[in-house]
Amino acid sequence: MALAVTAIAFAPATWLPPGWGGAPRGWTVAACDVGQGDALVVRAAGAVLMVDAGPRGPAAAACLERLGVTRIDLLVLTHEHADHTGGLDEVADAAAIRAVWLPHAASAATTSGAARATADARLPVEGEAVTLGGIQITVMQTGPAPRSRDGTEVNESSTILHVEAAGVSLMLLGDLEVAGQQRLSRGPLPAGVDIVKIAHHGSAAQDAGLVSALAAPVAIATVGADNDYGHPAPEALDLYGEGGAVVLRTDLCGDVLLGAADGAVTLVRPCRSAMAG
Image 1 (cartoon, rainbow, N blue to C red):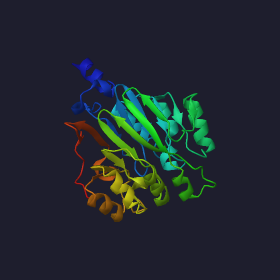
Image 2 (cartoon, rainbow, N blue to C red):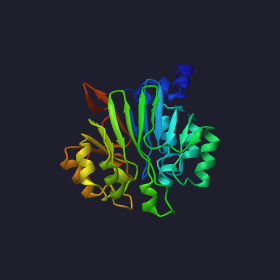
Image 3 (cartoon, helix red, strand yellow):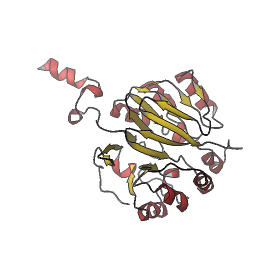
Image 4 (cartoon, helix red, strand yellow):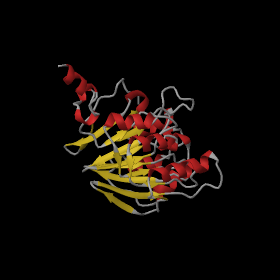
């Protein structure tokens, strides 16, 4: 009995059922609760994509442990802000990373962290399409490279992805400001998007035309509880809500775990508290 209990206590999360503290099952998209920052994981047919590494510290790595993820086929760092790139070293310690797409104007810390994690680190190219196992990734927009460390310019350099995996279509909008969102909306957009990762943590800077054009039934706001920025802004919540989207917030849900069933996106695990918006 004692040996059995000890084995269970130290078993990897992937070996245990969820009710015993094991990794959750049935998810395709996981928006990690990393506080005020971004870390999103997509998996399908044995492949794993991670987009952003969360803020400095262990939050994103801890999410990977909760999910039972120990290998990342591609890590995309959308732009050079600490709440998206700060957890790179810890993520690299938690999982084997095969390739990294760097942000424009990457800092020395991000560049060296990526080099330590993998020999395959480069900038993405707008329009390129990559298939990883059961995941299809298209670079919808990337850059221009910021001319300074001005926050707006860096946000506008975000790499924007369309991802398809296991019957789920996902748009990841980085921290685009309104001008970048409008630029994106002028190009061809994928039809039938199921999930949108709201730009810039649900700031008030949202383009109504892009929201309407994507018309996704589910939107994710990656935000920290009681953050100093007021994210998600009431204007963003109203805009997505009026468009018919269910807005899922990491400050209220914790990790947002989504899959597909009968052609519709479903929550794999209920939010930990009542949703507002």
